[in-house]
Structures are given as structure tokens and as C-alpha cells.
Length: 155
Image (cartoon, rainbow, N blue to C red; front, side, top):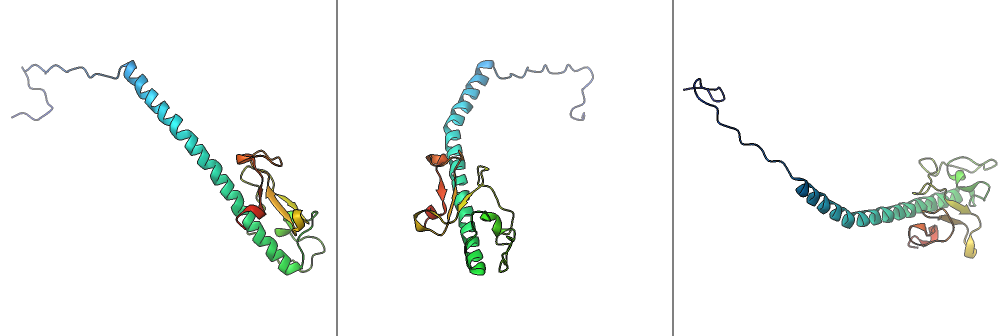
């Protein structure tokens, strides 16, 4: 009895059968299938990314709205245009009743990296206007580039 894997003297080793690799045609077919799958999945994936950015902007606008309400309860008024949303994280000059910060973190940009727009008083008789200008950072637009207002978040 001889241990396995050790050649036996006087015995010829069995010839190895060559291993067969993939042909160029097989590799091209696989790459074609992967490309077709990617062209089907990628648009759906990027559409979901756009929707999640809009949801994130709406959530931030809602957080600002709550912080502005708390600011108003403490001070008796909303921040003016000069104070802007910075008044939610930094005490404005000559604001003795300020009890902030009203946001737990620094003032964020919108999901596309643009600053939020705050105006006081707002349009249509509202106390203030608060919005994201969307992906393009310009007023108006449609789709991802559409403006997202604090007043259009389901109120």
C-alpha cells in the first residue's frame, strides 16, 4: 500500500487532460448579457436615487419648519431675511429671547449641495417661504430640477 499522492516507482504517471478555458466568443456573450442587464437595471436604480434625494429635501424642509416654529415660540417672530436660517443655529444679535440652537447640527445644504432659500415674509400671505431649488439650483424646473417648497410637503 502506497500513500496517496506519492508516485509509485516504475509506474507511469497518468497523462493530464488539458483544462479547457473560455473561448473569446463565450466571453463576449457573457459580457453582452451583463451589458443588457445593466442597461435594464441602471435607469431604475438612478430613478430611485433621484426620488430619495427629493424625499431627503422634504424631510429637511420639515425639520426646518419645526425649528422655525420653535424659534417663533421663543422669540415671538420668525427670523428676518438678514438673519436667515442661520438664526436656527447661531444667536442673532439683539435677540434676548433666543433659546437655541433649534437644529441639532450645522445648517445643511439641500441634497444637491445648494443652500435652501428662506424669505420672510413669504409668498401668498405666508409668514415665510422656505424651499430647495432642486438639482439645477435655479428657480422653476421639472422632475429633479423642480423647486421643493416647505408648503408642498404634504400640508
